[in-house]
Length: 178
Image 1 (cartoon, rainbow, N blue to C red):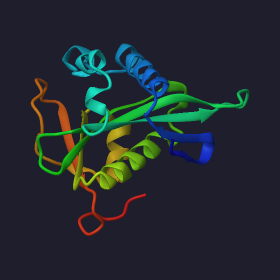
Image 2 (image 1 turned 120 degrees about the vertical axis):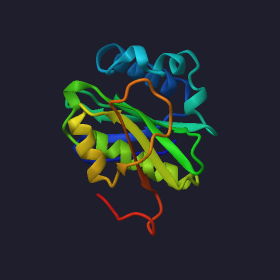
Image 3 (image 1 turned 60 degrees about the vertical axis):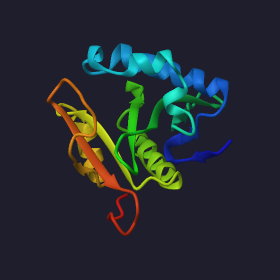
């Protein structure tokens, strides 16, 4: 099990065990119930019915963000993210970015994305893409700070307000962003 320790008592762990998958599923269900914009249009329901298929190797990867609370002796899962294959050659999609509301604004999303980008590069992808809503101002600012730029649509979606972003993963093709 590979774990990365980070500032602010955060660490990440790629989902590998049955318990990890249960924690990932629980976070996705919370996300779908509380924070997902336009859940009736989302593929999350199909994903939840078929976990871990889309997010397990060799099709993808899932990651947990864990935090050590002052009154706890161990880290608890507070967020997640995933990689999934796309129809674009050499590209993977960053999906299911979620952090529980009380832990937002502390750098957890940046940690998740950076670890997912490293994983994507290690898996041989050339590009990472993602989609988000125009109303996700905080997310858009983070993605842009990490080198994501507008790209053509890479999937079919019924809502025209979905924004598609991408970035190269190889140093020669992208500026270093931190």
